[in-house]
Length: 89
Image 1 (cartoon, helix red, strand yellow):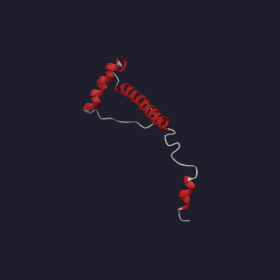
Image 2: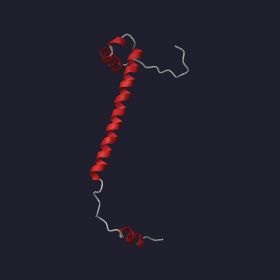
Image 3: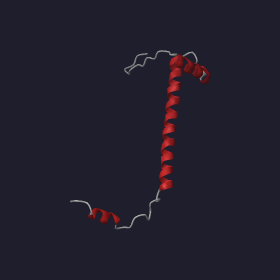
Image 4: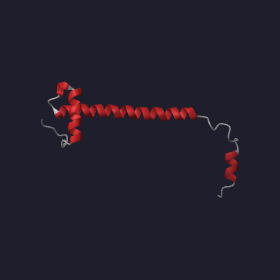
């Protein structure tokens, strides 16, 4: 099929052959086309990575919310100014 986009060539390693076998069972309608199976795998991988990224962000936000305000009251209002008095100009 003509295209101006770059093409990607893969050598079928043992791992890729095994993965394509799994993909054939998952998407039997496309079992006769390694190209279509690879596109399915790429899309499944994209979704998995996006979900993992969303989960990492949610976990980080949860830690921030859990610890927000933990240091409240540890310092007086003028502590920073007193520290700055000791700094050289």
